[in-house]
Length: 146
Image (cartoon, rainbow, N blue to C red; front, top):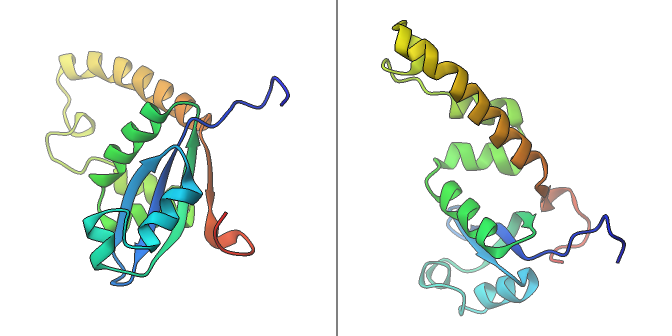
C-alpha cells in the first residue's frame, strides 16, 4: 500500500429497501454488513423490508467518522438523501439552504453580520473535510455488490 492510500476504517452506506425506503448505516466491513442485511440479520427494519439493495456508500479513515456521517444523514429528508445518492450537488445545496425567516441570511442586525464571517469559516472547514471523503454511487458501477 502506498503512503497516499489511507486504509479504510469505516463506511457509511445507504440501502434501498423493498418498500422504496432508505436505510442508513455504518460499518467496518461493507460486504459482510450488506450480506447480513440481505439475510435478515442486519437490523429489524431491513428484516421487515427485504430485499435490500446497496445504492450508495462513503469511505472514511475511522469508523467514528462514518458513524457521525450516518447520524447526520439519518436526519435528512428522503428528497435530500435521493439528491446525495444521485450525486446532484446543486439540489443537495438547495435542500440544505435554511429557509427559516430567522435564518442569518434574512436578518440584518449587526451581531448577525459578525456571526456571518465565522459561519463562513465553519462552512469552509466543513467543505474542506467533506472534500476528503471518497464517495461512489453504486448505480454507476458494473456488477452489483462489492
